[in-house]
Length: 152
Image (cartoon, rainbow, N blue to C red; front, top):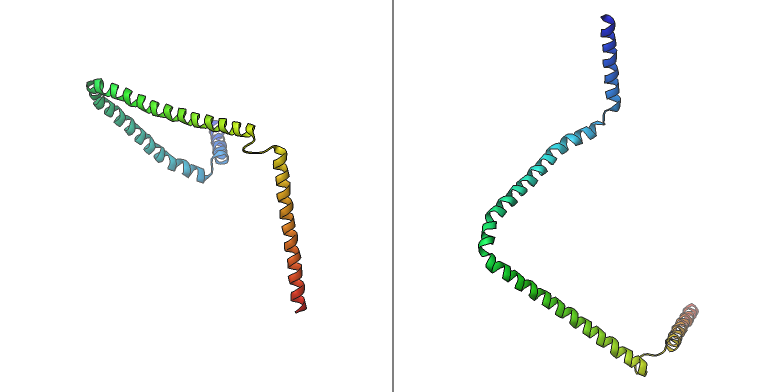
């Protein structure tokens, strides 16, 4: 009998030691304790929202049935008007874009607007050369100003 008590006492000590080693830190325990009320509060708010929605539907459903001969055709007319305006705008934008593309294509084929890629590359090369020349002139001017300042 005494042997069983010592075994139980020994097992109890082992359990205490195990729990002490495997228990979470105090900060995690406090965080868990603090999150339970917050979770409960959020759950209560969601339940209140659900109940309010169901009650609102229960109250408004008879009104929808009474006024449905007016509301359904009105909703269909509004939906068709919106779709018509959107389609009109899309078709107009497509027409303007197509006409613009056709005009630019015809101009480029007749040589009125634009130029070949080779001419554009030559133009860019000439502009870069002019810019490099201007940089060289600025450098020369700064040298001259520096010499004149040293001589004075």
